[in-house]
Image 1 (spheres, one colour):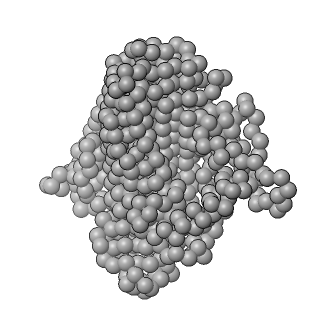
Image 2 (spheres, rainbow, N blue to C red):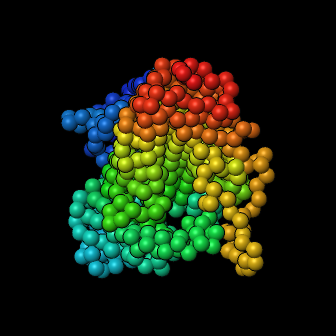
Image 3 (cartoon, one colour):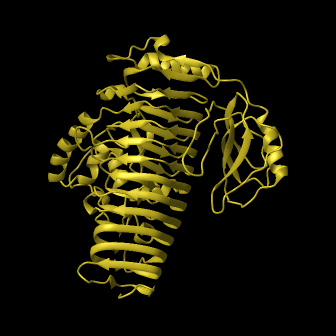
Length: 542
């Protein structure tokens, strides 16, 4: 029925007449449809040549930047449909069939104000139970909206349900309690390993059709967890247990999306996460749009990644504004033996139109690469001077995985020390776990981390990488690239690159690299140093 439309469709749209025409911009991964909007709006997910599933949740008219969803002032609009694979034009027959599906839209979802369920937004009362009651009540009607009025809501872990919307309105703050027991342990994946771990502050766990949105704030109140980690690190480092500290120091994430589908996170301010901020794990069809992340408040929290996409597919990240103390936007797929066992890739990801103000890197792949990462498009990202690396690929010789078909274009870097960095023997004291002699009753996950990985399975493979339209000023070193002599970085293509740096830097272990219209201006007059490379073409002064 929808053979022409796409392999997969995800839309936020308005009801309209059946005569619709789908239009897809060249190279885009979505179609846009002009619609004469009716009062009801809906969000749906479906699959080509299958009937529409009953996953319908409330969406509101709004504008987005660039080529995304837009509702004109007269009530008309544009229906955005994410597609895979992309096609230039979709036929009117498919559009009419799609419009027919829209007729199943229901009425506006009911509101469930948390104060009616006993929540007191005074910043002192613990509101966990009251908020969860509102969530459960909204779930019973199928697609209710949980609403927060202005005020500070002190809460532990909350668990959203299928069809529920969480509306954190302007002036509302959800603030995490600083008691670990408020975040019950549950089975999940943490830093590439499947294990039990405290729940996040906001959890979408094995659910579908969930929307988290608003102009309010979700505050992890995380400094207590940061201080706990640094105390543990000081003692663990002395014992040669640097690799274990991140797993032994249990810290709640801010938002966990786990084994879920058709989830959107829109517009919120996210701050002071105790650990990773947004963790999308084993999930599909997830959109993160317009979030502001501010984790460096009252300190610099360790491992406070911005957005982690972990063994997930069909993910769109756009219009993010990030300051944290680790990777800003990072793609992962499992660590070492455990990640190779799970063997689930991250794939079909789009990242665009975002700014990274402070972080360990602007856009990162790794270090957890065991399940593979593929079919990724990154465009129009600005990275500012507090960030030491712009594009960063990292892994280790026990990770394994195939990383391929990565397209990065339109990145702008201002004062970033190393615009392009690759390190496949990254952070050895963390990456390589070894049980100390004489250790008894080690935790199960210690043994999992220390499980040997044969070299033929452990070497990661990066290939078919396209990087273009990159400008960088004020850099220290243009390139810092290394892999392994027996594991080349293969088939990299650079085009329209402009980097001004103090020195040109180096590339090791590259094979079949092509540079087109690449200008590296090094203040010291140096050229990029090549070591153990072969088939490097177009790099001036190599």
